[in-house]
Length: 382
Length: 221
Image (cartoon, chains in turn brown, orange):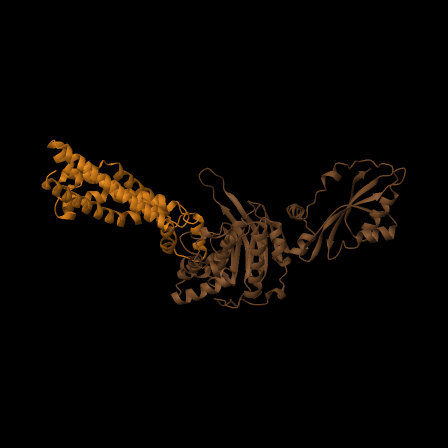
């Protein structure tokens, strides 16, 4: 997909980073925080291992102030992609423009200065075991050469921001996973970055803690205006937090855009499989085992209806039953909300005639097609 | 045991501590940076210099595989150049240092390599220079291992110091050989061994204690 298809939404650009370090280059659109231009990343062959094309033809933009999810299976190139943003890796071809600066062209001291405006959090937190929570948060400030008193004040502020002011003097070994990630987030925000990169930051956490950390990130995005780039293999993370999503497969961007658009109308098989995981696409075993391929007299036809869009499925069964005068039974249903849109499927049982006639089924399919609900007949049950 | 003999033991203990202490200090001064460099200079690492890394590795191995007693006599001209003399405790510090520095370097290298590579990446991600990464991340995180390495080096040096009698270095080992063995005084031999065992115990316990104190990884669980 081309960069142009990923719409920038000015509504999300509210709350410009309150405490930004660097001026934006006037040459770039002020509403774009990160832009990948013709990126390819190839790891050369090494010690008998063949070379790897980790990323190819990457062209897209991340809007300023947005929360963008980069989702893909392991090995899809997510880690390489996110590491191009803060200069931990360099593209083989192309350039990465962050906040108006071509980060891929910087090196040495210039790169290190630029890196201070890009924070990063990690799956395994990567805290120094030899430092307390406060001292871990202080580390990037020490590296940036802040005065001691300023560091102390900033660290206290950050500990409060991430909700662990009482853990000031605790060592990482005394903290829970969620608390460690809060320290990681505070540390990443210490130098007041304009971008926060999250490398599978919740993958090592339990579901409740994951939710709390994602809420914290949403708050940070809202209150500080920090652009957040999340890489994850978990659909639930994208669904809860991201407004935009980039689907990565085998080093290529296969789909990108608003979360609601992409996941209500997934085109690529990978996107569809992520969606299926999120909403549970399979039928209950007890139902699936009863489905046969020939109509049975007095039985039901099994029809699955895909539901996509705001409030789409709400009244479907009731309307279908009323308008066609059928005793529709609901065999299985799963509806979820992604980016404010309903996404899911309903599995309906439509009565067959006493001799197994499919008149009602045909009318149902026609009705569904008229209202543009994708539907398929899975078979029949007694 | 006569007061004279006890006096000899006290004096020899002092010589041993003097030689081992200074050699450990100077050996660390060279071995620590060397070890950090060895641990961070392979391809793709912080101070990537693969060729220098290999050459230094070979030099370190060569020094470590030379038997200490041969090293002592082989470098006599160098010892004279550095210490002004080739005999006595002070002169003995030269070969002891040369033997301990590569040993310490290898131990330091191992301790530094134990530090999670993710921490280097993390520090890089917020713009730390390679030197800052060494001073603020690698050394503090490796500190428990480094203290244990240093302890091991001191204990080994105590063993090495027994051989510097060959160049008039004195010390406990020399006393044991000259009085205990050559003058047939088994009680002297025994006394020397007991003092050495006590010293090693002391050094090891102190090292263990310090390493445990600075280890924040396991202390609170």
